Length: 179
Image 1 (cartoon, rainbow, N blue to C red):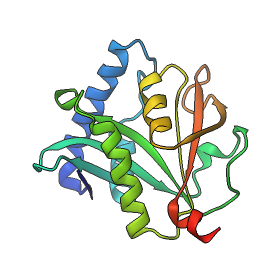
Image 2: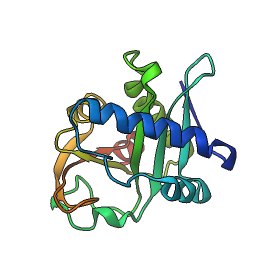
Image 3: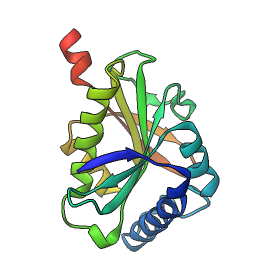
Image 4: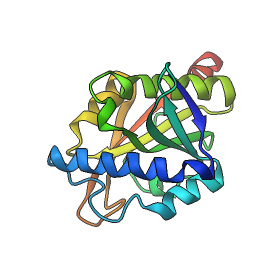
């Protein structure tokens, strides 16, 4: 699996993947992404800032999308918990989705492995990878923990006032080797 930076030409593909992800969450009874987030403006900003990536299987098929946002990510300014490391050298994973036509093939876990490998090769300055997910998104919680992320706290109302998110962090190997 490979990830590559998205371009303006990829906007509609990413929007379709995220719409499909929204539908998958609704089918599982998860309220995450059921409002106006994420929308075309978020994805356009991701592309413009170089944060948006497409996820491709080994046979070259586009199977998903992810945003890797540079710090500071002010969404995480006030978590109920404590980071594993106090650093400004982190990235945040947002807007992860694998299209339902590719579900059940382990692509979500492979996506996380690819993102971690990509960051360690291309961004050795990154000491920590952070993410959050809705308290009811058991699939994402499982994938995060399976890939070494530790739950470090909660965050109420990040995207909607009534929503509770679980916050995770993974220290990179680059940081672990330096310690």
